[in-house]
Image (cartoon, helix red, strand yellow):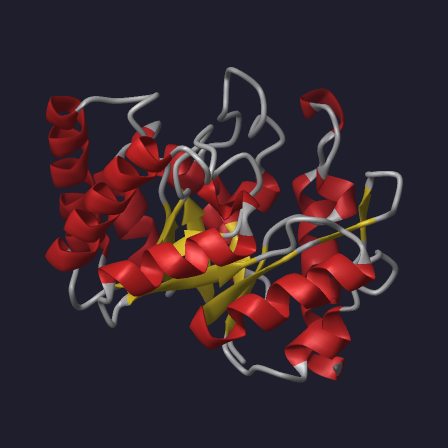
Length: 260
């Protein structure tokens, strides 16, 4: 199993209107001093920075940008066909420029799996992306508040499209042991990547070992790449965030995954 570091874990503004408070060019040398040599990049870290400088820094520090965590909108509630076409061209160009091997997509933010007309539009747009990036893995994240709210609906969408490069980036929809294992059983045959995070029953982020999801029971069933997405020390207000502390915990979490 290859374990990637996700740069979103180093971004305390990720869920604020600001979205970005860290310059990726400044983060890359710090990442390079850890054991991680492959990374997943939070797309706003690219779009808010100088992409040429980022590309040069990646090469200088011998860091491989394996996955792009894209925020392109594919639902009719957030975009129209014309805007989607423009953003799709920009996404494809960015993937080609950086040489990403995988792209993570959010499968219709705010779209209910029961909203058939909206699901059809999301399906058509995802298929367009997957066809244009036929040599890249296009992975739909099992994130809540999307079509993935129904574990079987996201499976059926992927199977209807029927493209070999389209699959699932898996994370639990619900952070409790039984629900996570039930979801994984439905989706296992389409899972090609894991987003590793964990939480306590009450909701706060936990370490992979101490949280509610029994990752050991999941990872023993499937050997694919994974990304450390969030760690508890990184979930804090911007003024309290410390890059070194968060990086140290990410390294520790990766060691724990390898121990499984």
